[in-house]
Image (cartoon, rainbow, N blue to C red; front, side):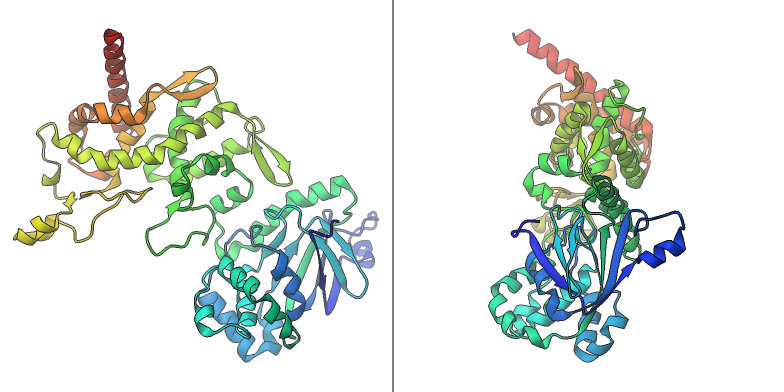
Length: 482
């Protein structure tokens, strides 16, 4: 243990489970003081003895990000009105770490070397509320009201740390604390077993919070390579785990939206038999069943030919083909937005009237003011899904989903990698009008019904074919110029 990463937590009351006698009762053949290679210590910790946690620990290991709301308000009310009952009204805090040492006088030396899987596994809202309760003793109401997320509380905690030290002794309320540790921290196998178990324990403890599949996958590291490739402007808006994203300016991007788009290049790789298992997603499920896209993504990432567990439960991508698909995915949100923004004019360039369909609404304050029937207009300017680019038309995304999937027609195979056959942005600038002209046939057949369009496999395959034909034309023109 290093001094830099070390902290000490002191229990007022603590019990070891299982104890040596408990273990003998459970299994007469077992000499190990543990169950499944795990021991736990349960008891009560004084509020003042949690200072070390607030000083050094993040909530990265907690599947749900903590934010203020009705839950924290209820905890604060208990701390203010009935602090003596708090240890019985609250489920408390769950801590897990592979690095620990039991000291004298109910003290434990803890080290959190991997903050993504060690630290506070459950009870983030309790920690946030307790931190706010303590800060209320030294900060004014206006500062307290600005706290929304854990990071806000931590920032104020650090600013007021010296003042908090002066009032530390007044926080003598008890907090239930459970500490999970490997049975033998010196046994490499026991530690590895513990690290692999922590994620399942964490997910199970958070079931009441409706922990999403994507949240678990995020903790497994399945999204790391995607996040690192994305434009930061998009990555910062993705809700990688429950309650993580907070903004008053725009809606968040759900991670399953990205996973759905990932299946466009992944399907191309599967068609070329480049994936270590036969796996794909039907085009229409990219729109109508993103939960299925997410499940299939997990199945792919769990395959030993795609990723390996390298740091406890955290997996690392090892497959070049899948990595190349993530390179393609990094471009798809911008291309999605571009198609949404440019399609109306591309459609109109064929002497059609996109805005004539009642499902389409226009943003034009001047024309709306002059119009007798204002039902064809919107008051506020629409924006695109990923980058919030202002556009002049609002219409259901289902109308263009086959075109987004059509981008697969621009993807080619280079060795074991999926690559763009041409610059997709320049291609759309040049050929989206031609494709939109042909796409009108599909729109007419579906009677501009976005559900029929997006949920019909034939419309997606039609779009792929149009992109492939346009790419052939583009290349023939390039060759003739040369």
